Length: 263
Image (tube, rainbow, N blue to C red):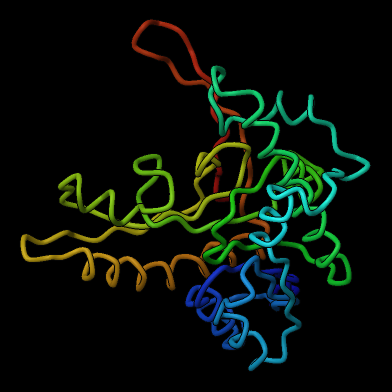
């Protein structure tokens, strides 16, 4: 038996993936233990799932923080270790021609909220952080403080599409509207982009002519509840290795990609 890893979880809503992970841990399918459940949403019903299992919970109200900053009712003071130039250089969420003030406001407000999130997480040491329906994009400020070792990422996410297709918040909807014949879900490590980190695992399902968006989401969620605990178990077994690979492009050049090897 492998030593159990400590898992922190962040949610924004009902927490069905959280429940799948809790169940896998309690059944022994996943060698892990949830040590906290945090959310950005005070009304997240998934918090009750954690409480029922005796898991510590907390809330960092992102919306309240961001609105207070926008209204000027709270002095905008970023964390002492905040470096806007460093975040500009690392982030890939915004294009090069994006309005600098918009980017700055996003980075500052997000870092303030993330600093509070890190503070709330601090009492609960963890080996892996899982995003189980956490609907906030993480900035390099947060990522670098959770992932000090770039070759050992420890923030994992579940996405409702077969990445790299259809990143963003509505993967199943985008899959359905595009007319795809196959849908699915993806577990990946977080990086500085939007759903662009190294892929760990995927599961796919057929889309039938009589499928609706509702039935597609149902199929996808059932697979999410399977693949997420499986990928966490691979992490617990130390079977996930990040490697750099070079791939040729049609114009004869090469691109570098960080991928996950299962060993």
